Length: 254
Image (cartoon, rainbow, N blue to C red):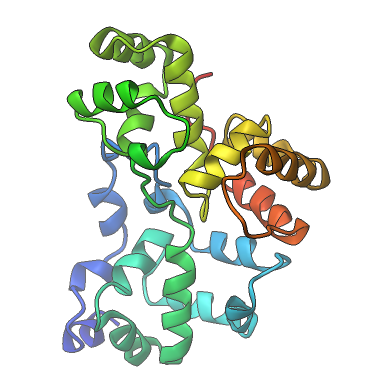
């Protein structure tokens, strides 16, 4: 397998037992905002997909999912991060298809789905309802987006330090932390994070515990009051939201 990887231009170390785990043992400074996929086994993909209410484009992944993941493990891919590395770049899916025999189209869809597990950074200025003075104070402190904000506010001691640096009140910092934490849920952008917070759900853990019907009703009420978006978000999407929140570790001290 390693020889085949070399012929296909895939770094040989990718398939060396334990090499990736050792290389990623140190967490990046913003790893608390993003999931640490280097410690998440490949089996997590199956757990997230099987039995879930998938969007139509993801349904084809269920075909031969277990056997394909077994093939990937046999190729030396043990964690979700291993898979992400192997599928990186324009040539990644093709190289892995040649190595494993898994269809190229399947691997492209798998890459898109795995990447959707990651939250997107949200600019502080895009959150509705934030005092411009607070945005300026955060910008002066070098905090421009949700990953940086989350890291600077996720612990009690960090929040005290941030308050001292910026002059922001404890309540403002907690509001900002809640918005950043909610943005860790995939597909939750600046507007929806604000609506969820206004609906009374202050973070990932609260959404994960929520009754979808109650959450749906409160989101509708909050948007009727604030009118932040015109589209309709149905109960089916809210159920998906609760399930996705349940897949995220609660990394903040409240």
